Image 1 (spheres, helix red, strand yellow):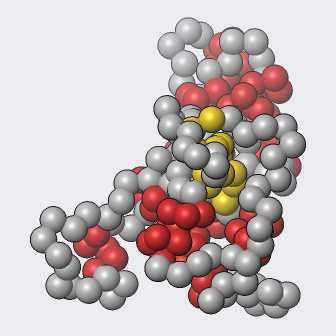
Image 2 (tube, one colour; image 1 turned 180 degrees about the vertical axis):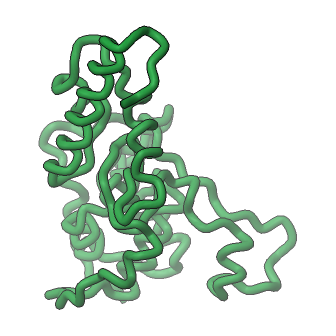
Length: 222
């Protein structure tokens, strides 16, 4: 039973809500927001508090309750994931170009295609962005308030979930990237890893139009 300072009756209601929450998260095929969960619980249920208590209940077990952006889901404990991972044959593996584009968007978001190309130093084809959107790892955020109104891109909760990140602040920092050999140990003075932004539209972004389908000029990557 959950300890409650207001008597056995409220403790029973809280325990029932906790069981409903547990069942709902296990049954769902997608991570859920507190807003998704609230209608299934009793009136006045403190969803954030219940989520915290369920996190504690599953701490140290084979599955853990984890947050991915503003959503919650049960996932295999990180120390067991490699042991239990099934070998899956993927019909299409991401190219190096796609991985580079994904990494640039992750760290520089919100970013336009031109901004991604400026960082990469080569042109990024529309097909690469299409593939990343099909995987559900990036999304169109809005349109930049500049001539041509280019689309801005950002990552998704699916991206966080796939890479086991609670939020973008969990992306590897400068020292971690250097330690993994992904950055040279001899960097220019003052070099900083970009800080991504995944909040609401910024002042330099306009909302997408209902019929926006992205930028239409697909070009093959070099």
